[in-house]
Image 1: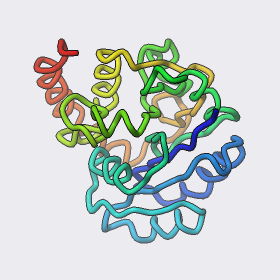
Image 2 (image 1 turned 180 degrees about the vertical axis):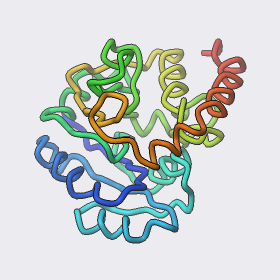
Image 3 (image 1 turned 90 degrees about the vertical axis):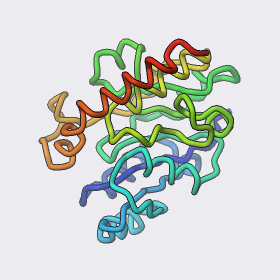
Image 4 (image 1 turned 135 degrees about the horizontal axis):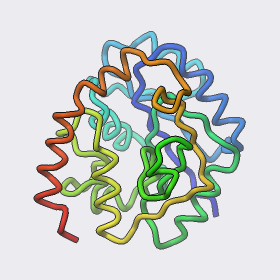
Length: 221
């Protein structure tokens, strides 16, 4: 059974809504995947682009990714949630592949971004599907039931915490046939811009926060 998914997109760029929604439609997920763009108070023109493209819009009044994703989680209701950036390309059959990998046992499904070596190897994921009941009961990270991501992070390492926590709990699975391609400059698939630079400038602080939390929670189950 292919359960419905809320796709949470913490948007910042103009011009991304139409190609994103077209890619999703062409992937075969019409009627089973519902997009919610999460904007901050400075992104009203961007919000209109996503509304015009057929997405829902939630205002988070924040520029950081984790609070945006958490706001999107609270505003939606489908059995699964998926967080992705605006810069992805959905390949046909991604949703069915994720459900096959999850079955009844696994609650966090790593998608294949066709770029990051650890992702392609099935060891990590930058974009994940999470079962909503799992997030509500355990949290995507270590210590915040009801939240997908730890809000002490700006952008980087939020995915690392989710993967680590899911592996500790025995609910992680990689789905190599669930391809959501990351059109990122690191893989030569996009040009650098101010949004990529904004995330990168917080890498050191995010790494320190993740390492602090890993030292506290990393051996817990």
